[in-house]
Length: 230
Image (cartoon, rainbow, N blue to C red; front, side, top):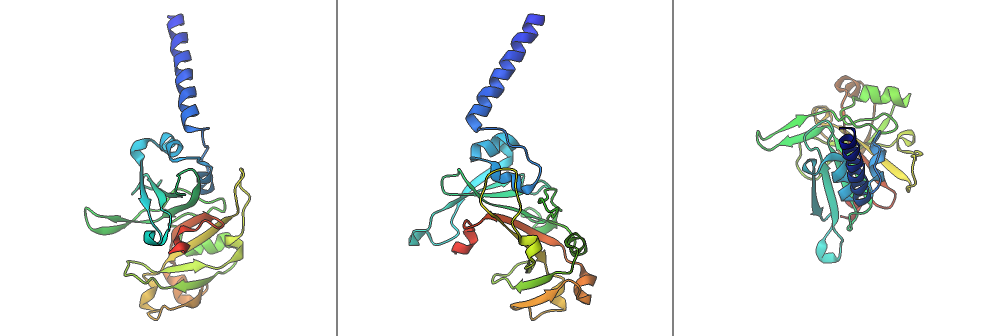
């Protein structure tokens, strides 16, 4: 029996070794920034399970103009662990990582709110209320309002505070990471219907009363922002 257990253990170790050799070294995930450590899509699938990762080719620009496609992996969609990973054309470099607090339920045709469990090294997460964001920043924030061109259920505010968008040290070699935090504004439109390119402050009485949530977190490598290539 002891020999049988020993043989089983050795077989298990051999299997794990072969699997890791095929998918690359194991990635330890603590914060959103750690997703930049994945070396390829196969490694991402091995970590989360292939059934939990959906990957498709996406063009952020005009393919007829010579724009290259990006590979986009959706991890655990419609759950608190959902993450969008945007790769380069070859799928061997993570260009951008996103988390959102809203999902569209196609079956029931409605948008649902699911706070995300993944946090940045700064402690920010999609679904965080503005008041908590201000406390973490230890000062009030100014927001640059950018109305969306297409009809949508929410507008956006991009935080323009250097403390939140500054470069952070990560425990691995990578290029500078750029952070963009976006707030849900749909409730504020009732009071600020003229939403054009303008500035709002977090200590505004109406803004504080509505306490909008952090809807979207986007982290990308400097020089690798796909959305800027539209």
